[in-house]
Length: 345
Image (cartoon, rainbow, N blue to C red; front, side, top):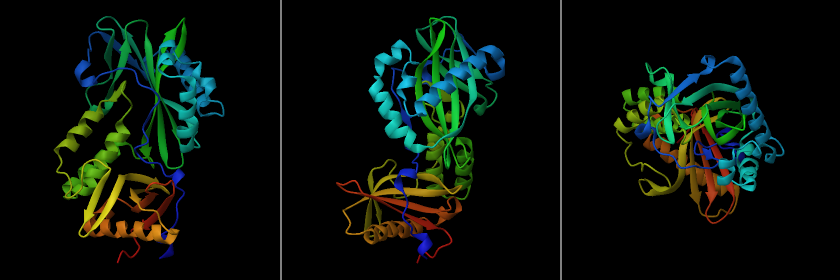
């Protein structure tokens, strides 16, 4: 029984809510502004090898420097426009205090490259890249009037997750510079947004709306690529999520008080997490200050038992439950893991 309730190092558990925009420029919804006849786009092997290699080198060097001991070395690669929206101190702090803590990152490589050419139209618009015959075969990217510009996705692997560094590159004086970067999770223990979508659809067929609700939320977050890049499959995932029946007694957006009979828990976040190459259900709760870790562990276990009783079907989708307690008005945290093969009585 001891192995089912063990302390976790909170800093190494990565929530799906950790989608980190470095900075924002004004943009609008791709669904409302796509102008396919004003811009053309080439993808991956359609791009001349020399141009593709140059773009890859710029992107990889930028990400490597951003993840290195001196992220300020990457700041010089931004466009003048980008520097006007983000100062170097904020950029360095974002990487050092946020993104780097999600690592270490390994196997850094470019997975997709898009090169767009704007022929006319509005100052900023959307270009369609890829094959429209299937939802996962195309993307839309933001483009500006002017010379050709590029969007790249650089991926890296952490302990249990795959991370995407989404870059928008513009040329300045003949040299590629970074207009925008966003860091997002793209897979959990190897499962992508499409995998979670398929899992959610399977759970709907079994009338497991609680599982489907959690899995669709994960699919939507894993499909996100920031305000200037949209996967074609995102619309399909959103449509499926909109058409499903929400689970009973579960508010749509945390934080909220989650009621189970006479018990109530302050929920801060809920979603899947990868641990040891398995997918668990993670729930973060806020509790009053505790006297010792046994007290915090008991409160976490109370929530685990409540979920297992209200939604026993969770076992069909998750290997167990991870609950993280956060001290109300303080900074302490305590984690508890429950494996499905343990006794929940």
